[in-house]
Image (cartoon, rainbow, N blue to C red; front, side, top):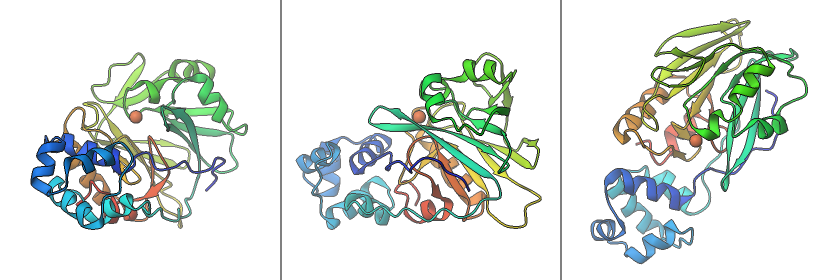
Length: 283
Ligand SMILES: [Fe+2]
């Protein structure tokens, strides 16, 4: 697999994960402190990235918040496991674009050695996309969007015009010009690549993940473009529905082979096996 940029750091630290989990559970620092027997000031310090929570405290917080305690403790000690990324039977170019204090990712996927690819999400804007674009890719077969947010669709109209792409595949219900809805289980074929949609509302009402396979390949795994459903060590915020995000997170991770590479909307690549084992939001 080709990657021409270094892997970025984890999107979320312990404080971000605690904050998302507190929001999901409807708890604030005081109510979480009461239930977990961890002082509110120490919880607030952790949310402010100044954590010195002990493993015992992290375990109690994980129990109250319904989090995977192994993963939460790993995050809390700065040792969240990041797996080796196995071989894929096609090439992937992660396009990392600065966004806030982290990065937003788009991905190009194509046959190795070809100048054509499929683009998943379009980043924070066309200048950022251009800055990350590999010289070797000169033609686009298609554009797929995971969800409609500024940091994932910023370069859309420019890239469609430049590469003469007339429609973008989008989650059902996404409202965007020239979007063509693709729903649960629908598959599109481009050369040797097969791309299957999973409808995964939760972070947004209209959100898709895409599984990329090379059906004729005899070796190598698959790639899951996960948008803001799951990150290495975290998950997207459940702005539309915490419950649906949680259901879809488990459903999709359990539906694909464990060696599937996850290409998230933010942060580094990871694998399904790693996130099933360690992700704080997977229990
Ligand atoms: Fe995002």
